[in-house]
Amino acid sequence: MEWVYCVCLPTLECWRSLLESDLEPTGEFDMEEAHLGSRYEISYDTVSSDDMGRAVEGSFRLPGHHWQVFLFTKEAVLELTHRFGTWRSGITGVSFEVPECIVINHEFITGAMSEVFGPASWIVVRGPDSLVLK
Image (tube, rainbow, N blue to C red; front, side):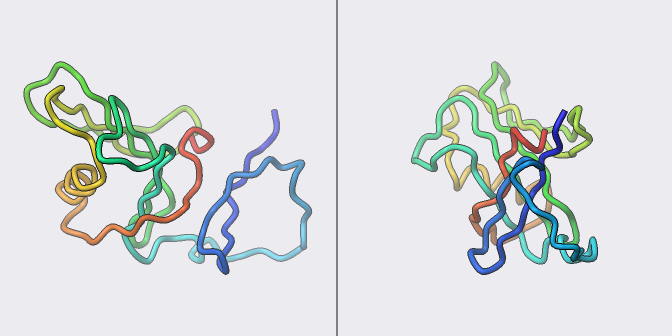
């Protein structure tokens, strides 16, 4: 099975997921600390709209942390709940169960994330694909 790498493109301020066979080694390596977040970043795998539907998934990065995965799904629950988890790949993240009557949009997502991780101004970036990270 081939490795997938999360590659930072600093001049474009985005991250891409690339197969090992698509990359060519340069012999240079960054320190691990260079890939830790310095702000609250969020990246959506789906196009942002006023109502993103029944499920929204993406990646996020907190100051001092690597990329993680988030998942919001509408469920038959009375109130918003969340739980932290680790996917099979070893990547960590958080999943939210959202009452059916709630509209899942950017404001709702960043509000819920701020409740869990502390008040923050979330910056939308082009981060790594959460499906690849998982």
